[in-house]
Every structure is written in structure tokens, then in C-alpha cells.
Amino acid sequence: MSGGDRIGFPEGGLAAAVEARTLAALACGALRPIETEQAEIDDGGVRFLVRVVSSLARKAEDRKRVPAGPPTNPFLPPEPELTVGWPSETHVAVLNKFNVLERHLLIVTRTFEYQETLLTPQDFHALFVCMAQRPSLGFYNGGALAGASQPHKHLQLVPLPLAPDGPAVPMAPLLAPLLAPGLATAVGVCPGLPFRHAFGRLSRPVGADPGLVREAHGLYLRLLDVLGIRGIQVEGGLRQSAPYNLLVADDWLLAVPREAECFGSVSVNALGFAGSLFVKDRQRLAEVCDAGPMAVLRAVAGPA
Image (cartoon, rainbow, N blue to C red; front, side, top):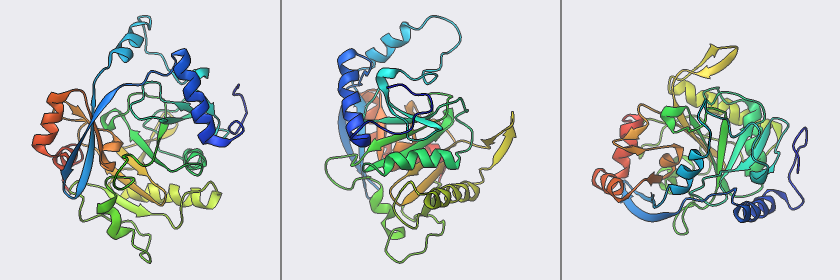
């Protein structure tokens, strides 16, 4: 497939395209999964998934092949072997090259935008086109302090459930009181979450229709406003005034401000606030176990 102005996915839709591209990319070596071991830690009413990375050798080897000099942008253009399709005129969907989770997608702007640029209706449209085709959780790491590893704007999408047993999103039990039928969709906080956050419901499940995209974008801006995060003009664009993470589920959004990237030496990205953490080795797993995952999240986001 070639990009250009093309929109859409190959015949069979997103799920079929992801499977086909995954098999082909594994066969040619373009996709380089990172093996992990999985542990579960119960804390604060949530069964956290903590994945221990057993090998980062492939990623290290790949970086050694890059010539010395200024950092390169892997998204301009994205690798054809990893490109799944084009959800919109403004975005391309590619496989995460060094994936820990299977079928992990990056929803990337076709032209360069800084990761710290505020999300736009176009970002939500591209994300919702993909989310409408398979059960999934969208997330965004707003800046390096929030876990972003690339400066080119990209949202991310992982399939649900995150674990074979229990809720599709491990943090969901603590969100349940605000998801009860009949409750208003106003922005609020979840009493069970011990870290700073803002939560909001959508009026209906995710879909790509313009009305819902506008609703989601407006809700996102309200969540940031509650957290004191606003757009500031930088080089002609609106960038965030502070780092944050965003989770986008089927009918709700959760925004979390960031005070630090790491708890000790444990880096946390948006999936941590869904109940899924990643550590480099067993020593760091022990650190998370000793402190408790909720304490880890409270340390990097600030106490509620």
C-alpha cells in the first residue's frame, strides 16, 4: 500500500489489516516485540498488571544501527512494513515497532506536530475511526515527563482486554460509581483514585460521527481545564502548559497531570493509570511491590 491522500484500511477493516501486517512485519524483522513476564499486584481495589521486560536487546541493537548525528523521526515517513492504513486525511496507523503488547497501534499525524501540541478534533476523529472497529483503549502521553518517547505527535491504541481475566481495564472497578446508568456526563473525580485526575463520560459509545468527535474533544478540553492545564501559543500552535496523560475508553475519558516521569527508576506512562505498569527488571518489580502501585501513581501524578 502507498499513502499519499489515501484514506481507509485494506479489505476486511482494521482488525484484519493489523493481523496481516503483524504477520508480515514479524516475518521480515520490521516488528521487534519485547518479551516480558507478567505479575499481578492487588492494591486499592485494583488488580494491577506489572510486566517485567526480560530483554531490551533488540531495541538497543536497532539504535546502534542509526548513524551518529541528530535524532531521526521514525514517523516521517513511517516504515511501509509497519503501516496498517490511513484512518483519516490527517493521520496514519502504524504498528508499534518495539511492542510489549500485541497489536499495539500508533495513530500518527501525517505531517509533523509536536507531541506537546493540544489534541484536536482531527486527532479524536482518527482515534475513534480505529476504536470503532475493535474493542480497544486509546491513550496519549502528553510530553516526555508523561512517558512520551517520540516528539512527533502520536496517540496510541491497545486492544482490550488488557488481561485475560477480570475487567477489560483493570482500573474500571474504581470508575464504576461514575459510570452507573442515569448519571450525568459532567466532569468529576472518582473517590477511589488516590492521585490527581479529572474524569468525564461521553453520552454514547465511541463512534466516528462528527457530533461525538466534537463532544469528546470538548470534554477533553474541560478535563484539562479542571487540572489547570491550558493551551499556550508557541511557534504558531497551541501547546500544553503542563504534562499530562489521557485515557480514552469506549464511553469515558480520564486525564491525569504529571509531576514526575518516574517513581524511583520506574517510568510510568498513561497505561499505568489504567492499571498496567512496565518495569525493566525484577529489582524494579520489587520496588513497585514494596511501595504499592497506587503509591507509584500518586507519586508521579500528585495526591488527590
